[in-house]
Length: 488
Ligand code: BG6
Image (cartoon, rainbow, N blue to C red; front, top):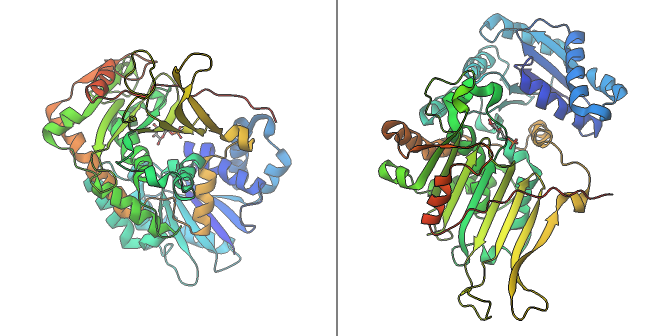
C-alpha cells in the first residue's frame, strides 16, 4: 500500500529536528512502507533538490558519525517539496494536483502533518476540506496535529469543531510525544502484562504518587511562546496528565485505540476539579531567577516556569490517594519519573534505633533518562544486629536491551502511517485535560495566588514547594537518576 506523508510547516524546526530524522530512521530500519513519499509544504521557495540538501545537512548534524550518505541518498529519493501558503486557497488546489501527479496509485493513503505554528492549524484544516484533499473515496486520509491543541478549554473545543467539520475523529491523530516514549508504553506493560502489581495498585497499598518532569534547560529561544503558555499549558495539560492517566487507568478491554482512550478519559473525568481557594492550597507556582531577562518575556511577567499540583482521582481505586504532579525548567537535573509510594508497614517489628516504623516501599519508574524501574525495599544490614536499610532491585533498559532507545516520533509516525491511534489523544481527552487546567489558570490569573516564588536555577524548584510537600505529610523524592554505562 502506498503512502504520502505531507508536512505543512516543512521549513520549520520540528520538521528538520524530529520528523525527517524519525522517517529516516524508520527507512533505515526497513520499517517505512516501501512506497512512501514525503512532501514538504511551506512558503519558502525550494526545489526538491535544495530541500533534500538542507535536510541532509540537518540529519548529518543530528546523527554525527552514524550518518550514512548512501542510505540518505536512497531515502532522499522519496522526498519532494511543494511551495505554498496556507492562507492561499489556490496553493491547496495546486498541491492537490501535485499530489495526484506524484502518486502512481490512486488509492494512496495520505497523512497530513500540521507542523506549522498553531495559529495555522484551523486555516490549514479548512483548506484541506475545501480543496477536497481530506475526502476519502477508496483511499485513506489522516491528519496529525502537533501540540499545543488549543490554549484553553474554549479554543480546544473550537479547534475540535473545525477539525470535525472536515475529518472524522478516526482520521485524527493528536500528538503528545510522551506517548511515543518506550518507557511510557512500558508503563502499560508493567501494569497490564504482570500479575503482581495489579492487586496492590490501589488505595489499600499506595499512599501517594509523585509524577515529576524536571528539565535542566531554560526557555531559551522559545521565550516569546513560553511566556504566553507557561508550565501548566506547556507540560501539565498534555505530558503530565498523560502520565497520570496511564498510571491510574483501569485495564482496557483490549489493546485498541478507543478501548485505551476510553479508560484514560475516565481518569480525567474522575479528577476532582480544583477551583477557587482550593487552587491556592493545592498548587505551588515558581519562576526561575533570570527568566525575566530572556528576550521575548514581557517585563514583570508572572508566567510560572515551575508548578506543583495535588490532584485526587475520585473513584474506588484511588479515593484519598493524592497524585502530586510537578514540572519546571532550570531544575537540578533532567528527569522524568513516576514514584509510587506505598503505605508504611503497620508496625515496626525490628528494633532499629529510634525508628518507629520501617521505611515504605517505593516503585520508581524512570521515564528518562536512565530509563528503567527500581523497587525500593528494606534489607537487613549484615553484621549490624537488626539494623535495616533501603536497597533496591533495579531494571535498566540500557543493561537489559543495549542499543539506543528510539525517538518518540519514530513510533508515533509509524503508528499514524499504519492507522493505529492508540498513542494519540482523542478529542474528548484533550477537552477533559483542559477542563482540569483551565480553572487553575483562571485562579492564578484572577487572584495572583498562590504566590509566584522565585527559585534559584539548579534546584528542585522553589524551597516553598519542599515545605508545601512536608505540610502534606509527604516528601518529594528528589533524586537525580544515575546514568550508568553498560558495555556490550
Ligand atoms: C515539549 C515542551 O512539549 O516538551 C517543552 O513544549 C519541553 O517545553 C519538552 O522542553 C520536553 O520534552 P522531553 O521529551 O525532552 O521531555
